[in-house]
Amino acid sequence: MTLLSPTGAPAPRRWRNAESPVLRAFARSRTVQLAAFVLLLVALASLFAPWIARQDPFDPAVLDLIDAFTPPGQQGASGAFYPLGADDQGRDVFSAILYGLRMSLLVGVSAVGLSLAIGVPLGLAAGYAGGWFDTLVMRVADVQLTFPVLLVALLIFGIARGLLPEGYRDDMAVYVIVAAIGLSEWVQYARTVRGAVMLEKHKDYVAAAQIIGGSRTGILVRHILPNLLAPVLVIATISFALAIVAESTLSYLGVGLPPTQPSLGTLIRIGQGFLFSGEWWILLFPALVLLALALSVNLAGDWLRDALNPRLQ
Image (cartoon, rainbow, N blue to C red):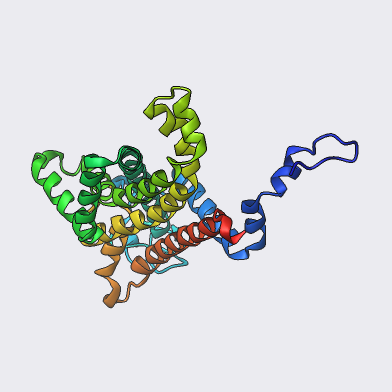
């Protein structure tokens, strides 16, 4: 229903937006507001890392080895202050986390983008065309679902690394890890989109578009796809958290990003080696940041799923 002002004219857009169920749900939930604040803080911190960080933690020329293992909140032998401590090479843990966040977010966004680019078109085509193409896509998806995501990512990562010349493996590590995670996550998009398309293609607006001579591609892109954005957005949000965790897990296992291109998983793997010798901060702070990031994205995804579900309105 269109809101009217006291003069009878349509109400300003901001008042119409205030009636949005998504905005109402956001205003009611303190949990999702906190999650959104954490995500915004993480995004800004990673974006402005070169200006916020005290040092480039992966430039050997700026490291002070005499400050190695400086505890959190203390000054090192060089006089530099380390709010979250220093690691075994004298790197500022706070600066390392900022740079590691950048890499983790880059991998997560890129992997989700690749999964979308593969899964959504396949789901659209399979659901609309049906027949042998639908059967082929869904059987491939079923086979991939029988294997854990990490196992598929490890397999793809191992094959890609084996095909690359040894001198290019570290330089191509980011692209390989994005491809490994993206190719292991497309199934969820394809199955969800295919099921939604099979419902939408029998509705009147699709029949009307067919009657006026719309092409298959035009009908899919201009008419059906906009009605599928809500579930795709929810899956993308949750997949973003899963991609970050998958990358961190692979890096922790030593088969992800190299130390020259560290992520939060790489920092956790480095810190794990010093946990039982008393330098707990090298592991703890990157792990807490990863936990806060993954939890915030999951909470935002769960809220978005409920807010976009018309049955819960």
